[in-house]
Image (cartoon, rainbow, N blue to C red; front, side, top):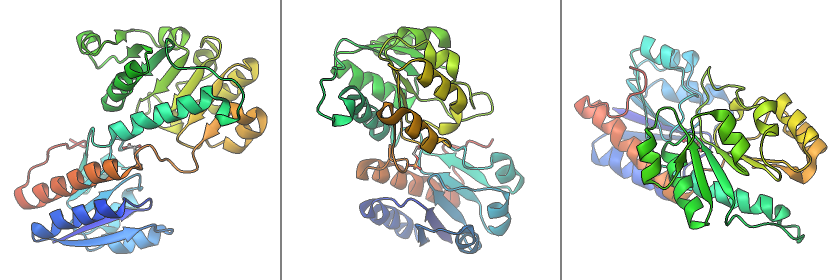
Length: 306
Ligand code: 3PG
């Protein structure tokens, strides 16, 4: 049986070596498709795959139609909005993610970008510190919890909003639970977004929330571009020259935002939150184990398309 690793944005080589070892030790064959530029390359490669390991690679109905032998897709990472779950279910294909495996990497980048923002993009002008400032964590999942841990190390006061997380879990982590999105944005000088892109969250953060942030507010998005209402963001930045928007995912209107707001906005060239060797090893090898366990033993540990 063959397991295809299809990553338009490749894992670190050391992670690929680890994945290969897991797959080959289990007696399966590994095929690697990295940095592909045309969808046809994926369609061709997936035709003979029994298992598929991906990152943010798109797995839609066309890919599933081409994948005649496919039984499982494992998204090496957290968010699975790049996989058409209904189509996978219709094709009898199990979809899993690898929760938590790359969360520290993303959380560390939040602070890399927060420091950069308050030190004026390192332009040499006097900036501000994170210590004694407030940070609101929008969703207290695996990344949000790591953000809280690191924020406390910086000496920040931490609040979080997450209807799916009990207050006690936040309190135990030294985080104040808040129960309304309005409160989260209005209370906190920094807000770090960690919600998934779903029909409910798409476009849900716009002018009202962003313009309610305290003076000198910095909105940090290492989640998904789709959760931002970009027109509302532009209006808020226009109305409030003290606000900044820093993102690890390039908005659709990136060029216009950059032109209008200069160094008050920042976007990484390519999503790089999870792009560390550690995160690649953790998520990649977990994905390899999960794929092997499913193909060999029929065990689906983190299925998301039930
Ligand atoms: C995730 O959902 O796990 C992160 O957004 C990382 O995505 P990536 O594997 O494409 O870097």
